[in-house]
Amino acid sequence: MSIQVYGIPNCGTCKKAFQWLKDSDVNYEFINTKEQPPARATIQSWVAALGFQPMRNTSGQSYRALGDDKKNWTSEQWVEAFAKDAMLLKRPLFVKDGTAVLVGFKEDAMREKLGLSKG
Image (cartoon, rainbow, N blue to C red; front, side, top):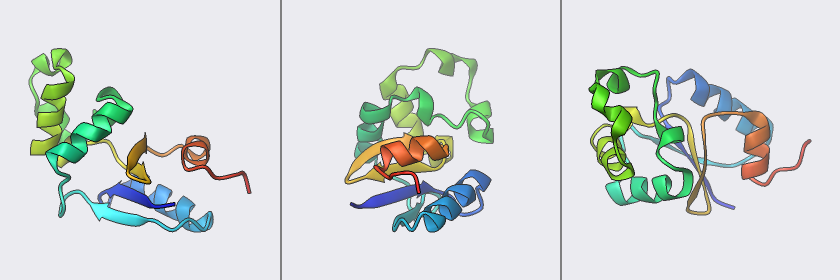
């Protein structure tokens, strides 16, 4: 099983997820989206798997800086926005075996989506 975690190192939610993964003895690769923004095609596959709505970082400055018309944007417009500014992506975003499976950190959802039994 291959797991990648996309986010930024100083994000509180990412830190919680990293600690949980460590405590659960799960190996993962961390990708810092500030230093290595994901490619547009990658983002497009994430949106196809998860939908754009759960992927939006609605509490960030980048999101608030967008105009009110963002409420009516299509998936394609969100893909473009995410590709231009990775800070619009909610964190952390988990990719398992090449497929986006979860965004954000909730222990029960992580166990289910990453295929881990309760320990």
